[in-house]
Image (cartoon, rainbow, N blue to C red; front, side, top):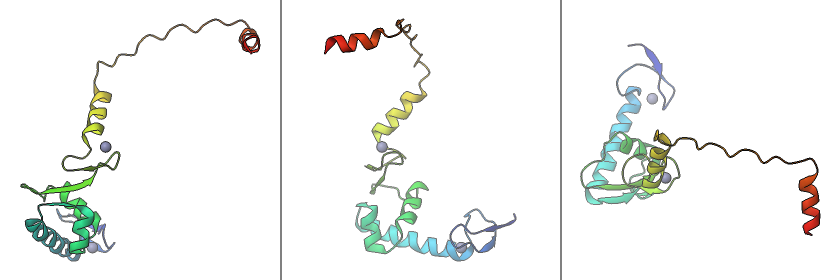
Length: 132
Ligand SMILES: [Zn+2]
Ligand SMILES: [Zn+2]
């Protein structure tokens, strides 16, 4: 346990698992309560809608989702971390997820490059002129 600067307000505070100063932590809990209350009535909403209705910053709503605070049969749309398309679960949309998987796959062996065509100096230039 040491001292740290609160990432929200910059105030010095004694480090805690919430990683926020007590003031910001209380505020965050209040905000989460507001959002949770809204979602009990509106089971499907987008982040801007929640923001409109509760006044809670979109950033905080997003944080709640990432922390897994929004669960059950509630569906909240939030942007894919990669392309920004609205998604309902995970960190990225299906397509971006698939793309990541493909990049990770070990079987993407590099195909041997075809040998560079040997070109005599000036040849390419002549060909292009002839064709015109
Ligand atoms: Zn703070
Ligand atoms: Zn995406």
